[in-house]
Image (cartoon, rainbow, N blue to C red; front, side, top):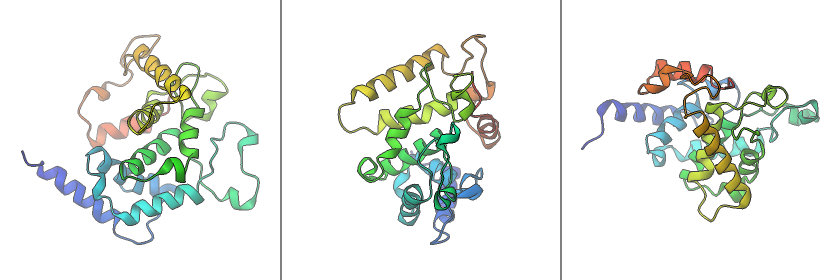
Length: 220
């Protein structure tokens, strides 16, 4: 069966966007801008199973950005902030953003575990006691509650992109993450039992995804 024409056109549009400039901006709001940022376009192509169609120039720029322009620590306490002027210019990241980039680049056959080993280390480091992760730093200080949206990409990154036996740390990470998702029945509040966002039960559209990601790092 041939691909849906709408999907093909969407892929072509994203390819043109990513190939539109040899100096595509990966930092700042431009990268994260919904539907028109590099992260979103690359992530959409990856989710469609067409990662090999991402222009190589965009892959190279994404790797360079992760290597040179990202502060490689999740900022929770004052001690986590960069101190040098050059490091202060770097961009902060969150768990889901890093995990999506990790999956894209690994699927493109990049050897990230040798070239950028800090990304996998980051994903494993910030698991909360309930088994998940949260892109809101306050969760690590106050509620200690995870976010489903923040948890899924890191779990997928480790589960799908490990081409060897899991380490003991990775086994615990995946088991605890699975426990978290089971306790929440994937889409439910653990304590109240209600569906957190009923849009999550519907096939994804731009409107429903905006609703999901605009509230993505809330804790339940």
